[in-house]
Image (cartoon, rainbow, N blue to C red; front, side):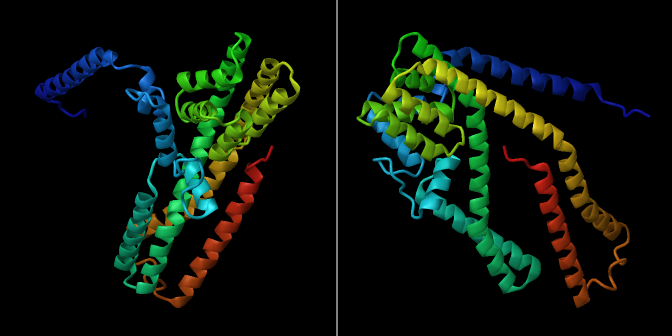
Length: 322
């Protein structure tokens, strides 16, 4: 039997929706006064109202964990490179505070759940050291994926600019003006570094260090060879764009073919946990006789190890290197 709905509530919901749409219309009407280009990427947003491009360059470097001259400012090359390639705009001191906060939260949760200080210390160490690295690694992977999707389009912009008669630095600056982050600000940093005295190849190699993407070395090598020996750079870059697009399409195709394996792995991992939770909810005393037995911990540990081995095997089956 369908539920009875008071027409007054329907009227209130429609009125609320009308207010939201009216506010959005007013915002869109008056937001046209704001320059579109200042919202394309971070570099253009910082450059709005700032005539000194060198200050913008230094600000971008500091936001990414670099010193004003472009070298890593964080202690440890591996950690500094991970923070740099993840694209987070966090100062080193604030990043350390976040890590300490995660460690304290993990310690408190583990101590509350188990009541054992050793478990709390282990969870705190994992939360303060392992968890930030995992988060930064995930952010780096997502940023590199986004850059890989933008890169062929950026190469097309450079090709069109070169065919119009522009030099390579100006073509790179056009990418910085027209494309969103991450590629817009990254190519903008390259353009600014060239403006303030860096050579083209050196600025491009710094770009590769900041991003760590696998397609950048081909792009940098093409520009370096053209600068030293000459040649039709626009044709070379056009072919490179086609190759990158074909690789991207092939990667998508392989991911689609491996979707069944990923779904099977997900189901096989979740089924024991769901069955355990369901049985424990329907019959709380079902595991009561063995739950506090020391042998149970070893059995569960062995089951976890076997599940981990199965996950590794299935991961090797559905992941392809090409």
